[in-house]
Amino acid sequence: MVLSENAGSSAVNYLKLKASAGILNTEFNSLDYKLYESTYVGAGSSFSWNDGGRSNGAIISQRAANPNLTFEKMKNINVGVEGYFFNNLLYVDANLFTTKNTGQLVQRTTFPAYLYLNIPYENYNETSYTGGELGVVLTKSLGDLTIDLGANFLYASSKATVRSELWANDYQYRQGLPNDVIFGLEAIGLFADSAEILASPPQWFGEVRKGDIKYKDQNGDNKIDSDDAVEIGNSIPNISYGLTLNLRYKNFNLFALGNGQNGAESYYSGSYFRPVGDSKYSEEVLNRWTPATASTATYPRLSSKTSSNNNQNSTYWLYSNNYFRIDHVQLTVDLPSNIAKKISSKE
Image (tube, rainbow, N blue to C red; front, side, top):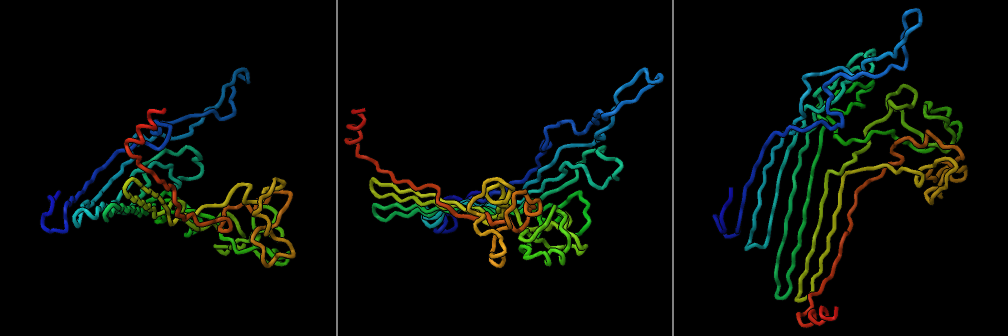
């Protein structure tokens, strides 16, 4: 729906209302386009007959067929408004959207263990996305000076609405959580001494010594293992934004562009940040744990052996991935035509 210039109000120069909806069939997110078929592989063994005179390699079923397998579906609804206002001083483009991806392929975890890999693919999982975006541009002329100030903002959230999963603890289920959820151990400091290690639940990630990372026992089973991983963050920002500035004065033009994001976390990883045995170390280890720095250390102890315990994904290595940065600043000058011709002729 479009309203013509100055329709209804002198403050509205142009207004368009828009809406769309649709269902899109999408191909599997896989390089195997025959997931509906059975597959067979060698068993790594053989069987014989004729008193051992003949033998043949054994073949086993690797994946059961599912002839009812079909496309994943993407269901979209979008509504928005676009317009110029106040004598074209302000341009606005705003949109709201919701998307549901249904029938996502998965080999369900609720089959009995004796089936091993012989589990068919099914259209089972669902993921939903909702959000909105806003773009505005303010244009103003003050004599020879023209100002263009723009901003764009995107908010998007996701939710794992249906998941095939089976966990030992309620807090481990991904259904109902954001699709980009990060699971990891909750670090609660560094072990100060051997007595603290002995008084704490055993950590099943290799040898633990004083100065190593200490983790929280989430389920109270008096041991620390993969069952103690909990929701600790999100890997994809739910807010993204950008800013632009364009100043034009006579023959001069100044342009600047910046962007940022908010709501995402990531892990410090690799040998620069984490201890990896006898590899070279970075400046990150300067505040490592020693008996003298036990109360102030922000980095685990060093060792010539790689510590599996200290290399677990946990809140100890988690950091906020929020930022704002200026990507581009450019100043240009439009030369008078007579000068430009002289420069061009010399070339």
